[in-house]
Length: 52
Image (cartoon, rainbow, N blue to C red; front, side, top):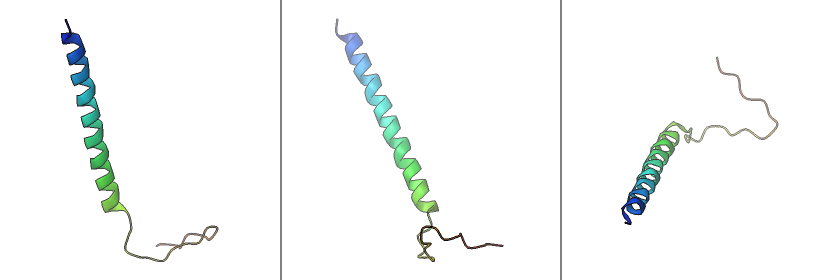
């Protein structure tokens, strides 16, 4: 009788787990690509340095 409810709960749980795993993966990729080498910081309103 309550089988449909258990199935629904299991599906929601699996969806939440998948979303969490994807968010962790995306955040780890963003952290690796972020420039944290301590380069020169720009003040708001200044032009970006030219790179050639």
